[in-house]
Length: 197
Image (cartoon, rainbow, N blue to C red; front, side, top):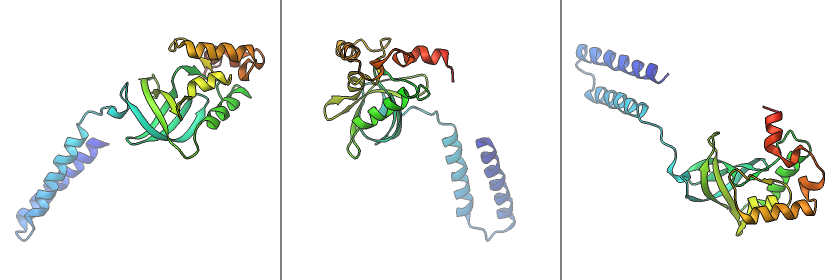
């Protein structure tokens, strides 16, 4: 579609040039303006799309929460725009894992400030284009809090923190959240493999 727009502008420009030659009373500013527009559009269409530098690994962003999708995914409004966030270090039950997915999402919503800001400490980006970040509010690591509440498990493949492992061990011992009874909610990754989207 971008190429079609460029061709249309070029045809329009050629038409204006031929009419300008026929009519001497046409303004040269019109031709110059159309030429500049064609050049600007051509330049813009051929620029490579770079990821926003604001979400580079190691960046720290102060944002507001716009939406919570599930117990480990949210959308944040940041200075550079909307950022889809995967909470670092945890794996929460999927929404189709009733009632565990809904409980996990509600727990995350309860930890997030309604009107205040959150800090995102960008760790990585996942294969779905989400920004993987440690989510912090009022000096609390919300991923760690989710594990402590028994609403998510430690994503052991990516998170080697002894604090998270200790919190999970305590949640299991006290049978909090997903540890209240055995089932697929205790291993969301296995559940996803057995129940593909």
